Image 1 (cartoon, rainbow, N blue to C red):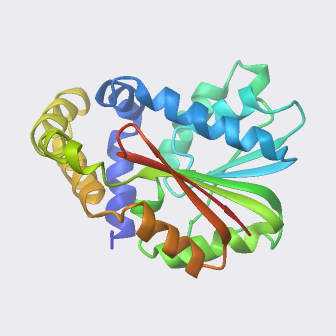
Image 2: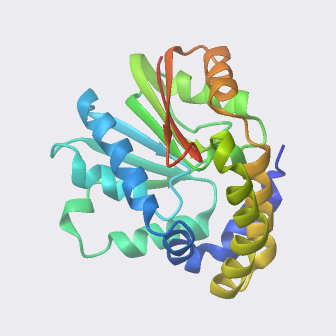
Image 3: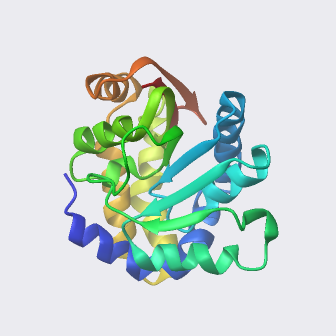
Length: 231
């Protein structure tokens, strides 16, 4: 499992160039992934939502744009430099002014029990040192019947794996190194993607944390999965 101090340091180093690297390396498909998440969350009509591992805030901002006015959104991350980037982007946009950004550990959330209708986490679960503990914390802060949405890398369809793994190993670290100046950070991220469970195994992990009605939707040839579960 990842070392929290090393992960925090890594994200602190790449915080300023994180967004542009993500958009470039995904070919812009990350926008579509977020919109698929927002549409599912919208259908639950939440009044209070936690976006965990919010990073520079892109998911929190997309949720604010896509949910009815009045929904209370909290964006939480353990890396302060990433949160600083989110606050910079938030400034000057009235439609995002209601988002509260807070620092917090995903394995020990500084939040009361049964606080939220929805918890979202996008591309952050694989960086948790203890996924079970983190998932259990997410369930704790959800109200009974609340929804968890996990948008995360997964294992691609069999026929696409050779192309995808070649891209992860050779192309992505090279391009990311040029864009961010920190190739080693993206070598770690690529490794974490390769080792992450497939949709079925991840669904079982979510179930073991106490969630029910766990569903997984493959996106973009299976390289990403959108999991939904009920607390």
